[in-house]
Amino acid sequence: MAGIPDSEAFLDPDSARDYLRSWKQRVEAMAAKTQAMSDQIGQLRASARDGNGLAEVTVDSTGVLVDLKLTERIHRFDPEVVARAVMSALRQARVQAADRSREIAIETMGPDSVAARTIGDRMQQLLERPDSTDGVPGPPAPGLGRG
View (cartoon, one colour):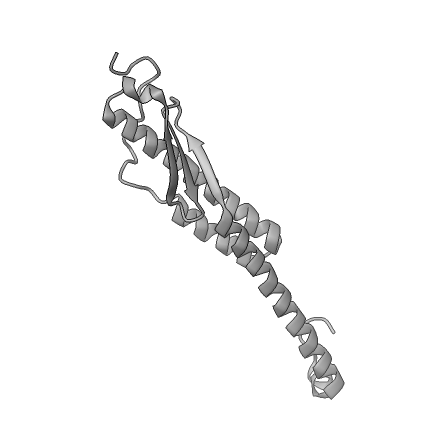
């Protein structure tokens, strides 16, 4: 029995039982998909580098920095430039994490799923949130450091 049964079918005990069994299976399938999606997103890591090759960052599924690698090139730049490079890479990694979270939600729940779209949108809002460095120019082009 697909969808909501008509009132006569619902009053029939066998039809009502079939409907409830089908409904329970759909709910259980949705719960399993949701758990699988949650597990995948929980393991998500995204890495990005700044445009000048000074820093590489890795963030987790919530956008929290979990790894930072600085290259030897940082010694040729002022600390403020290095800081902007780190923040630039962090923003890029967060965008990647948001994009991948959306992909995972759609792959798991289906492209027509309202839940997948809602989860994807929420992850994007959380991960692509502006921070205090937005609007600050990035590091100078290579070769324009300290000397």
